[in-house]
Image: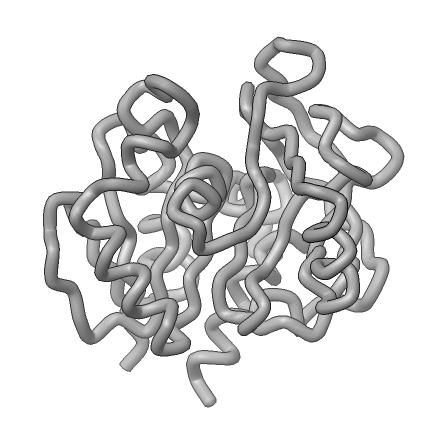
Length: 227
């Protein structure tokens, strides 16, 4: 049986959105896990939600990266468990060194909240197998610290290892290096992305019973876990 763990930190605000998507739309069992829990098991995958953990004090994700549950998430990641971090979840994965690079203030120094297009760069990951390569996805984003940066040498390695999964299409909303919107680790089981696929579940298409394109990120992961 598939079971998704959703860590919750003080300031998380997308945890219930993720829970709704998997529980109500995909009928997958989920658990909301408080961040102080230092032993977790029996989870098929972990999704770290967006929000403002610890009010983004110091910088987004840095305090949450030292919560007790992160040690367990690192263990699960090492064992090959799929881990997905969305927005603040991406920041937490970077600050936990489960993903390379850094997420810093948008180049506009303003909070950005809007719908945007991103492009699928790699469609051979467990999170993107339901997409076509170079497919364009319409998706919302909302962040103040979403500018992805990484040293040149590491960036070259990431490109070589096909770790850049999503890029912003035409409009780079935060000044990220080469428009990077999502990356994955070398092992292919830990991915972080700034846009919010869970926020697409109730637009006009979903109301009519049709799943939106961005939701294929979750569908890809579920199909992988069913194998």
